[in-house]
Image (cartoon, rainbow, N blue to C red; front, top):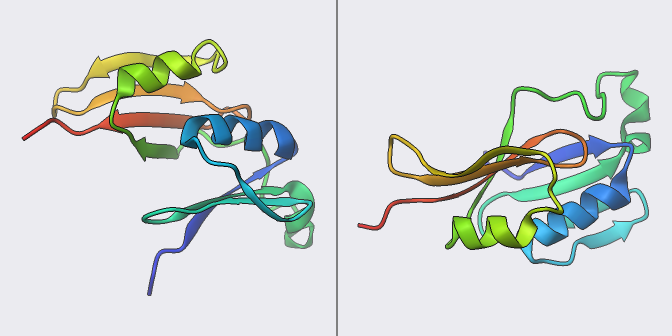
Length: 123
């Protein structure tokens, strides 16, 4: 088995795509109007309009997550946070060195999902 992606279902596809384009520094691939995709090393991040899961009978609910962190390893947490803020007005945690050594900054995306920009300690 190979881990493929995380997909965020949203009612604000364009807003979410614009946010993640700022976070990743990538332009999203848009193979179909209700779907966007960010590729790269490791797993992919997909963002889809709620219409893509209509057949699931309400199993997916946009903007309802409170249990998953979407994490991006970056070279410069403070610099990336500064470039993102104040566009990401909902700051959960300003750049902080965690007890285990990682440097992290946490913000919420337009749907309220928590996004962690982090770097590992040198060494």
